Length: 416
Ligand SMILES: Cc1cc2nc3c(=O)[nH]c(=O)nc-3n(C[C@H](O)[C@H](O)[C@H](O)COP(=O)(O)O)c2cc1C
Image (cartoon, rainbow, N blue to C red):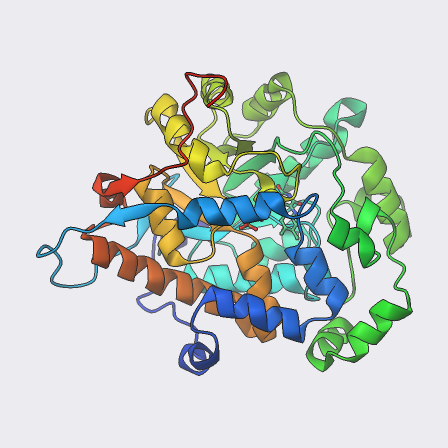
């Protein structure tokens, strides 16, 4: 463990992926990666990763809330680009950005969890393995020993036997940060997922449309042949000897569910001795509660618009959460990040770091195994440029930037 911590404090001088220039010619922004992913992926894979709840209104709101935020630059203060490295929960990272947890990113690109973890390790930015993901804690700990975080859903049966065993495994594997997801109290319908046959959390039964889609995308088909589809890889050991893919899916769906209560969060807090984050906070009252339980971090998020579409854009809730937390915990951000400039906006509104989900899937879709690294490179460059443009000498200094934020929530009133 000491070894791992010591290594984690060292950031390599260049984290840039070797093919950056080649890819930047065709994909100079993350917006372009999304267009590329749509063209290159089997239809079902793109729809699964890209779609949100209802009619995608929540996703659109997340994006337009970011677009509405303006930062007023100060000039004459920035002779060269600023450094963007940070220290977070006692570790050094090359930038205040990272990979949000995802269950089944392997549907978008087979082998995705491992590719995302490897890119994050190379760049020295946080990687969060989704507990419902396609690789095990132990596998990812080998690939991303310096940057690995673990997200957990609620496995409450038998007095949290599976949940507690998962965090025991995480501890043994050297996972640095535990993240409990609070914002999935219910299952919601994502129509684009349902329409391509991926909805309802059911077992995996590819229909002829999916097979045709795979056949039309050689890169995806090769990745599929090189990787199995181990959905819920972390849960397989609990599903009984010889449990196949669909047995494990059924078992996981039965065991996993509901959102953590605050009492349960407290129990995890008491057991997990390293930094712990709660994910999905939007209301400052919930942030206060989490701080009172002793969490180290609060991730302001609306699950990227994948839960009901009436939720606010989290970026509009961020300043109120930051105010109430008042430095007693780190406030992190996700939902709607499509550029390093968006990361700069989140920092300007008080976040210590921002994570992205879909942006990384678009990278995978457009560029396959090179995609996650390209997304990190683009975000790092754009963040550095954005800070340079507005005159912030470091990620911390972004908070001093003058911001116009028309959508900011005022929690002192029930109706705005
Ligand atoms: C395909 C997909 C699967 C996801 N699965 C999980 C999950 O298993 N657990 C979780 O806490 N969040 C999950 N999320 C939400 C992300 O962690 C994150 O909150 C969201 O993607 C951020 O918004 P963005 O996609 O706009 O960046 C998932 C997101 C996507 C796109």
